[in-house]
Image (cartoon, rainbow, N blue to C red; front, side, top):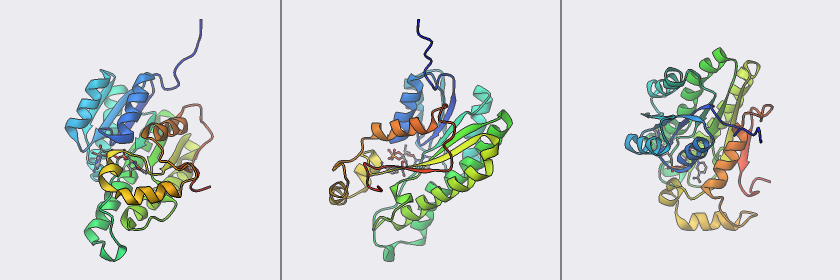
Amino acid sequence: MSNFKPPFENQVVLITGAASGFGKILAEKLSAQGAKLVLGDINVTGVQEVANSLGDHCIALGCDVTKEADVKALSDAAIETFGRLDIAVNNAGSSSHMKSLLEVTEEELDFNFNVNAKSVFFGIKHQVPHMIKQGGGCILNVASMAGIKGAAYLTGYVAAKHAVVGITRTAALEFATHNIRINAVCPFFSPTPLVTKGIKPEYIERAVKGNPMKRLGSPDEMVNAMLSIIAPDNTYLTGQAIAVDGGVSA
Ligand SMILES: NC(=O)c1ccc[n+]([C@@H]2O[C@H](COP(=O)([O-])OP(=O)(O)OC[C@H]3O[C@@H](n4cnc5c(N)ncnc54)[C@H](O)[C@@H]3O)[C@@H](O)[C@H]2O)c1
């Protein structure tokens, strides 16, 4: 008889932005491997539907990641419900409309920083103390290729995702001795609602032409890469911004 255990069995995993796209697929894949899930999203109905579809080992909370109290409440819910927090994936993010830097308003810049960068800062700030108490943990921040390269007409998003990489590297250094691994994943374009609704098709076509694989990565491929970064036996990987990009950054 095989002694194989799925790597995420009984791991308590928190995911923000779990009502759609990468976050939803990640929740489904982790649930199939026996993880216990704490799901948050500003789309309360959507995230509740995801949790209901997965089962009793998942809880869902309305959570606006731009609000520190909401982000704290999500981490606290992991402890109250499951007694610990093994892995946190700070995935929720968004972008204002594409436009020239010269036309970007202060409000749009703030929107990008609040939803993409401050959210990750709040996440780490309230996830790490629980992980220190329990002797370790793992945090994955969803940045973007826009966190390591420029992207014309996406100034606010690019700046905020670069901030995510900076916060990730710094936090990894601060908490390495507490056995807490902190990494960022940097996906190339992938057809989730964020991209299919928010990015002009001609922009995507140009991006595909410049990609060594001549195609986008599927949401499934992106999530598989995330699973490998957070896998509990991936114990020496920390402080990295890992591109999942079909070779664009090679
Ligand atoms: N799809 C891509 O091509 C791509 C590429 C690089 C990085 N990313 C990043 O991946 C992450 C997930 O995006 P996705 O592509 O799955 O998009 P998506 O739009 O399908 O999902 C994003 C989720 O985040 C939630 N969300 C938005 N604002 C929120 C807030 N203030 N508080 C809580 N939840 C909020 C949305 O309701 C949604 O459920 C984002 O951080 C995005 O920037 C996506």
